[in-house]
Length: 297
Image 1 (cartoon, rainbow, N blue to C red):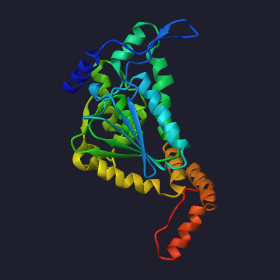
Image 2: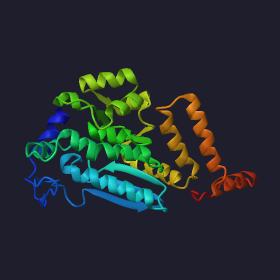
Image 3: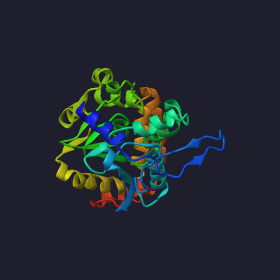
Image 4: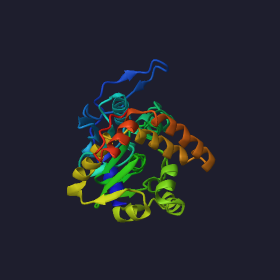
């Protein structure tokens, strides 16, 4: 609860909006999208990896409309870039993300600019869907607390690497809201049905040790080693064959499918990768007793 109080205090103590206002062409209403800085999302590309960082440490990387749109744009850019094979999502400072920027959202709601439902359907939900649907693997590097929609953002990644001091907070119940941003789907599949239900009803927390025990994260590492460990895995995935992209697609489909459908889809994608240059290289490398050099096609 102290975390939530701290987060709300940080959000409500910010200066008034300073971004240029624009008129909605459809309804003639003023719409203030955000007061977050232009560099509220920073992307760095290195060795085939796109490092996408939420850069609002003063509000624990709270997600306002501008940040959500910038994250979506950054993912689209990484998806289109043929030099990028993996994405790492992280937060600046001591938090991964405190979740929705409630101050900004309540202000927009009060001014009748947007409802909570519109905000979720138009901004938050497309981002979570994008993370699951894009073929390139995404790693969430969870450096600190991930709460509410920030927890959903972390759990939506394909691989989760968590600092031993970090924690998940199902913050919705403690502020009078129901889960959103895919939390019901992602928590159930990450923590198991019973634990997910408990979190949803109590607004509880899960520390790094328990998250690893439950299988919600792939590994836990000391905070000082988090970036190094993440980099090693990210660069390995970035050099992987095209088959891993189709594997991600098949694994996500299997979450909402049955065995026979999964068997049929596996046969479909195997036909595709069996005709790839990477498969030929993999077989040649195996026969020649050397490491393969995949090209992602």
